[in-house]
Image 1: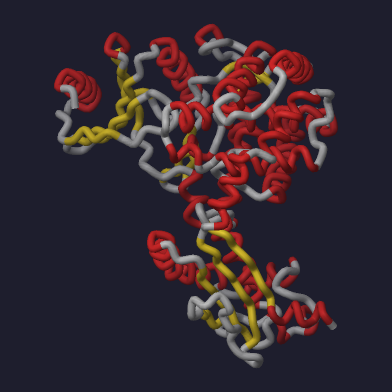
Image 2 (image 1 turned 90 degrees about the vertical axis):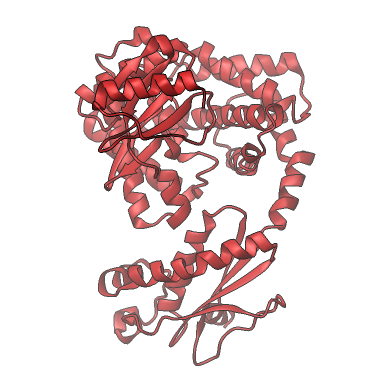
Length: 476
């Protein structure tokens, strides 16, 4: 580390803690040019931020102090030396909501955190934004037509051009203006966080904290919801996004009257803009700066685009933009990502009945894990559940309330995960995970489904689920 920087950080830390720094450790950089350092003293710790962009520093510090006075869970600004482009903030640890999602999958705990995040988002948007000093916003005080056009051109120059996607420049520019004008019709008199995503939500002592809001400004409510739910890296399922969107809308209606149809009308337009902006960021960091790990998230963003188009969620007349998006979906780079996806470790998760025997592994890999679910309370012993399966809500509720299935599965996943990582590192292609119970209908089906959801969110995996007994019933 630069000796002058080290001295400046130590001086700032000592001005707050009255202790000398014992260690100053750089933290991994993400998508920005800011640098962070964890400082530990004898009894205290803090995070130092180094950022040469003075306007951005001013925005963050002003917002953080304002939000803190509103009792919002943001890091406290502990000290600042803006002449040296440094400031000190509260140390909130290392775990983000994204980390927990990636580790556990979309569990009930993770879903509750997402709901808590959306509820807190409303406090940012509706309350804290009322008397905020928008004069410090960076680089603009409103997410308006100009801001939207900046994002769309970022996508054009750093993704479309670098990925060699064909388009007519003038026609595309015309479509950008149409889209920007359309979205500018939405009510934009609220605070938007701008980068509201799971990587910017910290978890400390089971409490959520929110960071990286320096890009905040006035804008439409839909934008931040789109940012959180459609993050390519988080890769929530479409059903999960729909459930969380409905939760947000229900909570919003408690605070203000909103026309839900009107909200949804603009929502998917903001989803589109957010995905395109994200592709621009991945293109800049990946294609231009040659940071390969940003390229790994591009397939998820393209999948999201394809879903929007196939489900006709954005219906405005932007033929050239949709032509370019079709070019992305059918491009050589998409084919490359599909090939890479096919090279991923394939996990086959199967439910079965012990009466019929353990399923055979047809991959040639010699089997895998077999877990016995018969120690769990059996809903099949009760008449009201006999015709149901582990996919039905009543059975799910029974198992989650009247058995230790949550503890059981956490131990299962803890056992499996090191093998998955080892298989990935060694280039293995297949792993089989089997769950058995008496009839292969309730407990094993539930465990197989939950395990599939858990591993679905993990990177570089292909997950297939098979229910041997349910398949037999369907074939009757």
